[in-house]
Image 1 (tube, rainbow, N blue to C red):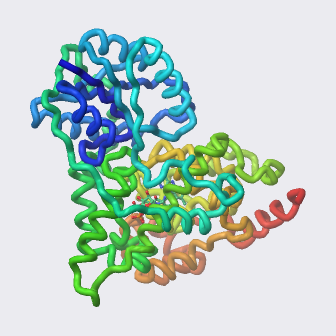
Image 2: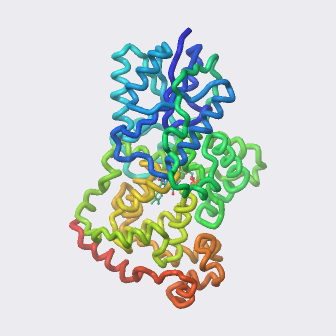
Image 3: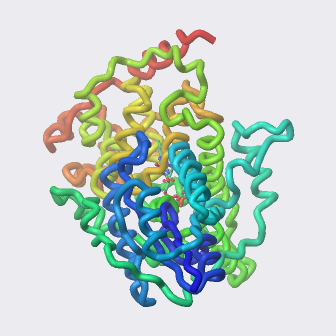
Length: 471
Ligand code: FAD
């Protein structure tokens, strides 16, 4: 009886899973495996919020496999040792996995593949959760893209009619003794701070499909405008599901296109703005693959000479806790702390405040987001921080400093978002929150801190530091 292992990593789904489908088609018995390997040599181990998500996502996948009489075989240890043990115990002759594109993951998989092949095991890697793998697109000069618009133009023109794979059924799901309970991985926090996450999310493939349905039913039709309004559920909130591979861009595209085709021509939503955002995700992965040093280093080396302010632990803590005295920044940072997610516009404003008004290095912000976001993603987080800080590929120019007051007045005109996350200010009129600097006594009476910096003066100082950089 032929047996294959399927190694799950950032692809915690059954449907549109090329590795799983290939193994189920070619073999009588399939053993789904997840190896918890925190000692893998990556400086970017999952943060606390990601670990919370991973625990629940693994549980969800186990539930799905359990419903078919199988299980996800869970083990902890060095991947090669674990796989060799499982191969011995199962008699497997093949391994299938979906590819990843973080630098450490590629390096680890390359070593693994070579060692297993030497052992005589057939290793098959498959395309994972991207429309287009990073090495498949190049400029006409054969170089990696550094600018989004031409990258997207090429990718968009190549997007095939999506044909996501249905969830396969193995002829037999193999089960072996020794599989750990999910709790044994120690992913959940020892002190239970996760009530807000629990209330906000349903990790797993079913949770992803449910959010997609909700988005397809409603918000997608007004996405171009609604995506900028943080008080609304105007975006899909699929980012953590995409990160953990519980859903793929092809599945999203298929569902949205099918739904659009069924709606009358007058109500047919324009899907392009949304597909373009998924394009940014692809671009981020393209950049990370071709410029693997960028999670730690400036994409634009000119910024190596930038004079950041000295690291200031107290300022960082006020920013992290949502106590800067700037309402939109604080609302975003508290949304992040409470739910593990922050609206994209507010991410830009909070990041701009940290890197420009406080002139703290973008890496401080990136590592806080890494620890607290449920969608923490090395490619997207690196792109987002370097974009805002002005040192990234195709970045916002450094001199573009977001004004949090104007941003709030424009995108949260009735202050619904501000009041949701700053409940101590909920009784004040919107204008008092949008022009907080005019009403220091009213805000102080509510226990809200005074602004920790003068926005105008700190902006000028940032621009001066930028101007002083050698060209
Ligand atoms: P939607 O608007 O519904 O977009 C759909 C999908 O497109 C998202 O789920 C995401 O996968 C992708 N996407 C959308 N915008 C972007 C973008 N600007 N860059 C890359 N992909 C995008 N996104 C992450 O997934 N993980 C991160 O760690 C992350 N860190 C960020 C840090 C900063 C400083 C900034 C400014 C942005 C960051 N983003 C990150 C991008 C963006 O904020 C989130 O992807 C988005 O808010 C997720 O919400 P959504 O799923 O409702 O997005």
